[in-house]
Image (cartoon, rainbow, N blue to C red):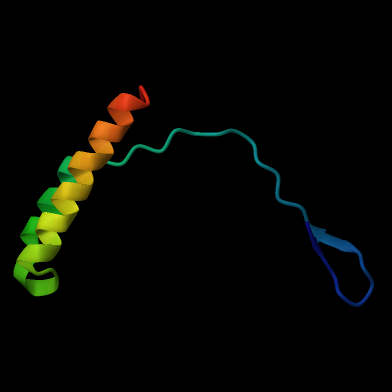
Length: 65
């Protein structure tokens, strides 16, 4: 809830409606990272991102996601 500081009246109330499962497409992300590789990321950065992807997939399997 956001209130007006002067008079304490409620201005806005944010209410969660529904939880949505957010899916992140690692394959597309890796393709993107590789496509801009030398322009933005070093080879070490790309390796680190790939390792993060691998660990995230392994963890998701352990958690049955």
